[in-house]
Length: 139
Image 1 (cartoon, helix red, strand yellow):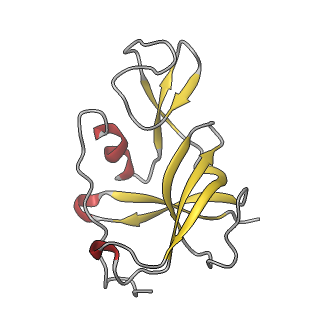
Image 2: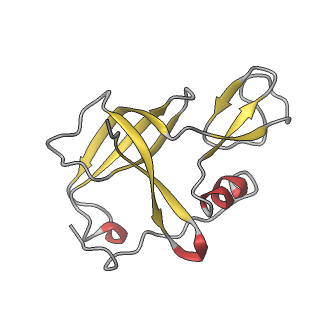
């Protein structure tokens, strides 16, 4: 695996639907869209509620805690990820009830498991942004 500083994560391209998500990462905050009518979170960002169809979506800070729902170990990634293999790509089910796709770090491929409790951590990227990652929850 590459040492810190030897590898750069590709810069995200914010859209009108994801601007607030990425802006919050500058302060290391994970925000999710919330439908006030249904009282439910949704992820990935969309222009309207998937529950009621209205455009009254709010952004709310998430806890950053969850469990591994599913994962895969990537041993040969695309050129942009060479030097990081093997790495874990996981669907994390957050306490808020939505799933987010990310990497699990600070965990060996032998130790990763479904339902493993995880917590949010951050990797700095360009322009003051941070990429949300997850690691095994501290006890």
